[in-house]
Length: 196
Image (cartoon, rainbow, N blue to C red; front, side, top):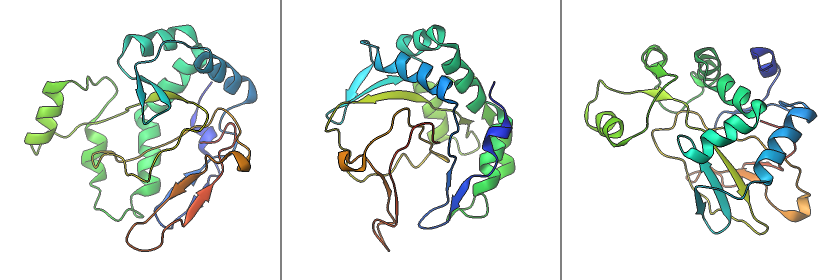
């Protein structure tokens, strides 16, 4: 069962951006179930950036993955709770480099949101229509996968990664957080199993 107790005692980093790290967010059993469900799949929605196969929220593959493994459904439902969203928003509110109207953001949180053309159009062109929602995907990277430095969409408030396998430092694959304008390569961490 996923509850807010899992989010106790994060490692907190403030530079270059606010970052929370949760060691052992998943139990080994939960991790293994999710890992086996993803790694054993042949059907993905797309291949991105020369080696990352992705299952996108809202697709038939996504629905099948949730039906196949209850732990994945539980994980999705956990992150799609307003209380969890409020928790993360509260941790970042006073540390963000940008103004966050948390009352408006929380009031506009939707657990059921279709990210279709009509909704994207309303979000873009109607200032008072801003929706907060969970966008979650599952990916499997092939050996040698590399992603150049980038930033997520400007519309994303909070991004998170969960690693379902360990990587040896000699394999590469570290998560690097950059502040392009000041100090490159400030935050560096090697992916570890069960971490959020």
